[in-house]
Length: 368
Ligand SMILES: *Cc1c(COP(=O)(O)O)cnc(C)c1O
Image (cartoon, rainbow, N blue to C red; front, side):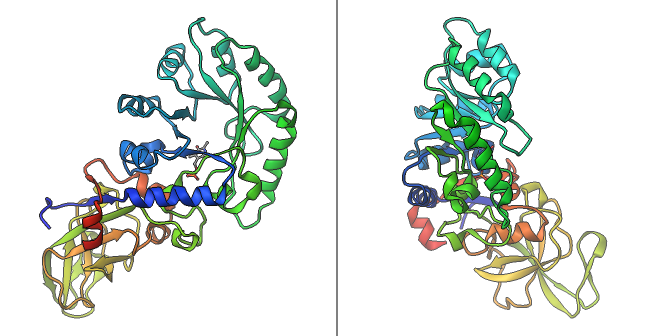
């Protein structure tokens, strides 16, 4: 191992392709918009777009991400999920041949005022009950009529909605959302997009003409109490670093900022080169596991900016330079997220810019 000291996020293109195949298996009649917003949930935008080239299109949440995709030669459909809110951005979206989501009446006005040369594909977003974004069901028919008449909007117009809690065990909210969406779009003869990952996995009714998987593509479960492996998905990111010090701490010695953890006996404590500046969550409690040379070891004391301390009592053979895995296929990020009181989505999105994303080649995959 000869990379510079510090955390590295290894990303596995084969796992992304495998997870896309799992989406296809669950929703064989749906076309797939792979959601690669937020730098592909922290995995690397262009890396993910290339690994997911078998998708029918992509979805992003910022115009700059769509611009990067086009500049890199990505020719598939790209849907801009928040749509646009200025004339300039609409013109730019049209130049980039993007699809825009229309979730608000102000966006309909923008399209109606567009200059003649400006033409885009559009997705009318219905608020079926999440009450975050979207046109209210009672206004959908009128909004659809206006957009259909709008010279800037290419036919055919598509419709979509977003599910608020498809990951919940009690599915009554999701059932109501799907019914509300179907009721107000049934007359429109428009292709529909409903399911996000949880919708695709748990709700056959959400496997509409188009689906929009995000988190499941990265091999992370959208459900609060399990891990993605239980669904046949493979973790894409492995966040690793290594031990750069091993020190003897005497019984009674306090470890780390605030001295929140005290050694119960004379013991070896490792320092691993990763911390909250890399995006490892500061709020995990002591005892949260990492892997040292592939074997579980508990964190002790507070996570600091660049370093975490590791209890090496179970690792008598550990040496400086030992591989440390913070999460990955053998230590699901869902577990770290639960320890930190958050979700896997947030942890992978927050892996910071100082952490190199390193595509796993198959040779290194087998030696890791
Ligand atoms: C982020 C997002 C998705 C993907 O959601 P996952 O839970 O990651 O599958 C789908 N649709 C919209 C509108 C989104 O914002």
